[in-house]
Image (cartoon, rainbow, N blue to C red):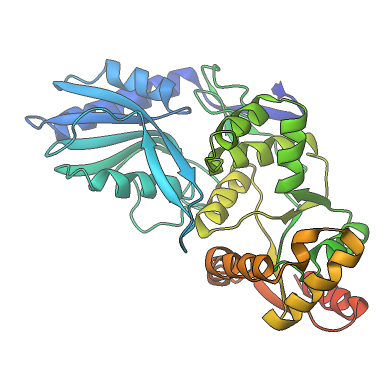
Length: 373
């Protein structure tokens, strides 16, 4: 058995099995692409070991590039612009083979394929060492697959647990019963400014023993304590740039790992776009967990304006009293954040809660929604 931080892992795929499967994949690729102009593109960080071993056995005249995918929150209704970092090679009219260590939901790999398509390659296929069919959400599965595995958390051979374990020569699987997050209750608390999320979050925490994860609080903690991620976030902010979603997700992951014995989490302030919601899904899937429900406090715009103006009397926040600022905040919410509802509606995880009425009445509706799961 293997112990990494708070979790225990058991042997899953041996070094000998890895070597044999890498050779088999290389053989298939050599046969499939004979006589074709091929370029391999490996996605960092996880695929570096697999890509290195695979490329050693490729006999085709070909090149290899290593890339990262960075995601930024934009200013339009999509709220997202995806960018490939590190690709300097010309892939036009070439046969592209994307090398990945593991494909679970398939969301990231599908984005990479879409972005690469704009450069007009002759073809694009995916070669992944591990594939989780039970977690896969896209339509087209990878063409070249090493091992199809259960939807369990694995580490080693480039795969990490909180950045540890990548250097292991074998693959280990999380020991059954050792994952405290497996039966977590994870809630996305949703609603416009003035909807009363803060008040209701406190009551949900008290009743269900959940941990409140506010991205605003997490950002402030990392920047104040000058953590590595805080420094990275500050480097973008000081230049007037938006912090990449990738950095925010890493902050959330680090915070989740600190509280692995928690009964669950309330995510507040994240996700703000569909793409961020997909990233959160990927994060939780990697930990064999999921979002159980999105609870959205629904309040009419005019009522929100009244509440925000009244809130200045208590909070002392001058911006709450400025009608123009209030209108702009609600507009930003509607255009950039509200569409996330559709993402969870498609997963049958969205429940709208009437945000009008007494605080106790609203709390009762929230409790009923959670207890019905």
